[in-house]
Length: 163
Image (cartoon, rainbow, N blue to C red; front, side):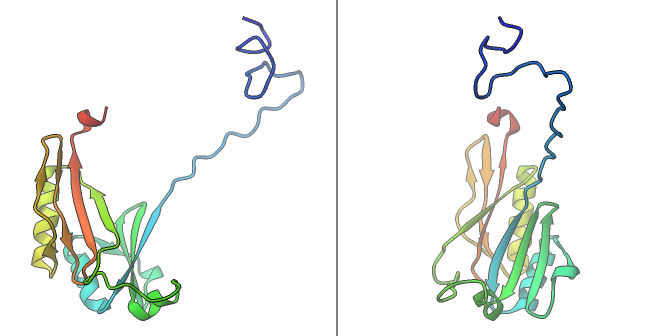
């Protein structure tokens, strides 16, 4: 093996020793991705009560009379928008999730019990079961709609099945 590159040749992507006086590039800082799910709602206060009933908090800094910022996890935020406010962000007509499903929001859970708990809370706070609970042994999932018809699928997967 050559001392100038791992593969013994210089080329694109080849690893080579640094020349005298050459500076290493600054390490890239890892960018933490976030997801913001925007949902149209017909009654903002009802929607806020539903998501609070699931145990989620709110970021008041990004909430107002037409919008509520629901914090699902540090990197997952649901923006509840009145249908009128939602219309400001889309071309054409605002869809009606109570009439046609256009997205399924799967949410990982730490256990089967958490899946069942979210489903129970959803039903207790105005949501409806969507599909039957699925138990595949290594994966367990339920599904429900919020009061506006937006579909959520809490799911748990055995970590050993992923490896």
